[in-house]
Structure formats: C-alpha cells, structure tokens
Length: 331
Ligand code: NDP
Image (cartoon, rainbow, N blue to C red; front, top):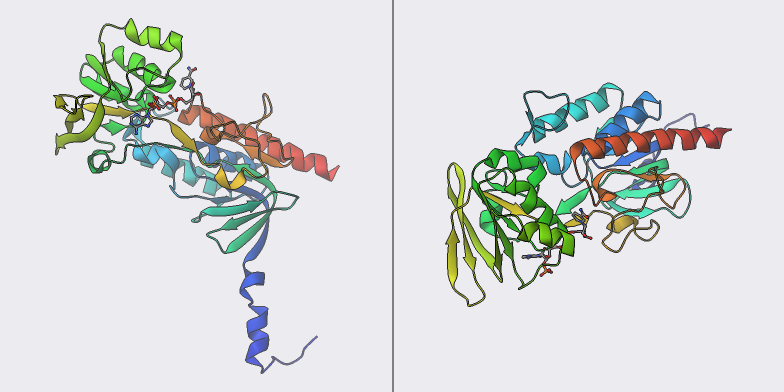
C-alpha cells in the first residue's frame, strides 16, 4: 500500500480515468419514467432491488403532454398529467429509487450483467433490466400542432375526449386507431370529422363498418391537414386541402392524431424480439422478454390499451418478475 500520495499528476489522472469512472454496477436498472417505469420502481425499491431509474427523453412520459387525467383511480377530482407523474416520482423516491436524468443510447444485452450506455458515455452494468421506454405518438409535424398541444390537440381520445363533450372534433388517420377513436368520440361529441389522406381506410373491415354506421361521423377522404387554427382559448378550426387541391375549413375544438405510434425499442432490437412495428414481445401473462433477466412493461410492449393504468399494472408485473428472477439466481 502506498504510504505517500503520489506526486505524479498522471497517477491521479489514471485513477480518475473516464472509462473506469463511467462504469457503474447496479442490481436493477429501469429505463423510462412513465407510469410503467415508476410503478416498477416502487415495487422494485420495496423489494430491496435498489433500482436506478433513468428518466429518458421525456421525463414523466407521454402523460406530461396531457392536461387533465380523470380516469386514473385514486384521483376523484382529476389531476394534471405532470402533477400525477410528479406524485409517481415522489412515491418511487420515497422507497429509495435513484431517479436520474439521462437517456439510454445503446445496449449490450448479449450476457449478464447487461450493459446500457447512458448519454453516449456512462455505462451501467445491471443484473436485471426493466424496459419501460414507452411509445411516441406520431404527429403531422405542423407548427400549429405543437402550439396547441394540450389546448385542443391530443394524441389520445380516451384520455382527452371527455373535454370536448357536445363539441365538434376531428380525428386524423385511416387505421384501426383512428376508427376506434372516431367511434369513441362520436359517443361523446356532437360531430366527428375523420380526416383520411387516401380514398380508402386502412382499418379492418369491421372497424370501418362501425365508422360508416355512426351517423355523427363524417369521413373526409383524400383530405390533408394544412393548418390548425385557434386563439388563446385553444383550437377552433382546421384548414384542410382536398383531393382537388382546394382549401376547406372545418370548425372544431378538438384535433386528435391517430396516425400511429412508434414504440421506443430501437436500441434493444438487436437482442429483444419485437413485432414488425417494434413493440416488444413478452411471454404470455408475464413481462419476460426473450432475454432472461430483461423485462418490458408499459406502452413499449402494449399496442392495444396504452392507458396509464394498464402501463402501471405491467410495471408492477415487471418488478415482481425481476425480483423472482434474481431470487431464483441466488438459489
Ligand atoms: P396504422 O399504422 O395502422 O395506421 C396509421 C394511419 O394513419 C393510416 O391510415 C395512415 O394512412 C395514416 N397516416 C400516417 N401518417 C399520416 C400523415 N402524415 N397524414 C395523414 N394520415 C397519416 O396505425 P394504428 O395506430 O391505426 O394501428 C396500429 C396497429 O394497432 C395496427 O396493427 C392496428 O390494427 C392495431 N390496432 C388494433 C385495434 C383493435 O384491434 N381494436 C385498435 C387500434 C389499433 P395510410 O393508410 O394512407 O398509410
């Protein structure tokens, strides 16, 4: 053992080598901070897995882009998405979850411990990994869409439809989601315009039938959205362009995107099985992926329900599965 501190500055530098300093070993790593990630963290922390959670690109997840959440049990008066996610975070931290800023930029899941790179520099070695990276709703890319997000523009009819009760709204898209959301909104709103860019819908026949048979849905085939218009109280219309190139204005208060979601699974795809869209496949009735010790929960593995409450439920499963996996390794 050296009795004296080295006088060579290079020795000190070597000890602090960025490569060594940037590798950290953890028992349970959770990527993602939506309802799934935080619920997994609450359960994992209470099971003494000392979870480290990286928040990802959108701390709090998709719910932070919603205004009021009224359908999450336990909030009888409703709650805003950002406040609810702050509550989730506090609860996860209360039991010792180490919540950190940072984005997972690469992963090596070829063997345990799994290596996940954060922000292209720090490497975390984890005994178990819980993927809760969510999905990102696709938007058209209009400036006005960003301006009115949460003020009339939404990518979730089930979450926000109720706020447009009795009003006129529009849904963009021609797939199953658009058909489902238009039908759902038709039960709440006065009128629903369904804006479809082609002269036909991609949705399954049964879903199309449902749309065609709903009196207060008007389908605008071969229409594209040019602009969403509004004022300080939110959206009040949209300017569309029809197949002949003519502009058409519709008066609406809600503008719902239903043009698909992109599951955030790209960095794991080399190792983890996904469907053709990128949703992570889990073994029936579990959160287990095809890689032992890697679990998935929330919207990154759920193309069907995509609700905060269902995501939270799968987060709970992932933490329980992770804990049982680690226990089985110790036996
Ligand atoms: P899809 O990818 O199936 O459909 C997306 C729709 O959005 C298409 O009609 C597409 O048009 C349109 N679109 C894409 N980009 C634009 C754009 N820039 N401007 C205008 N329109 C655009 O996504 P979904 O979310 O509908 O469905 C995803 C998966 O989930 C599917 O497999 C679906 O079957 C499934 N699903 C099943 C449900 C159920 O069974 N209950 C409910 C919901 C979804 P185009 O056709 O011209 O490409």
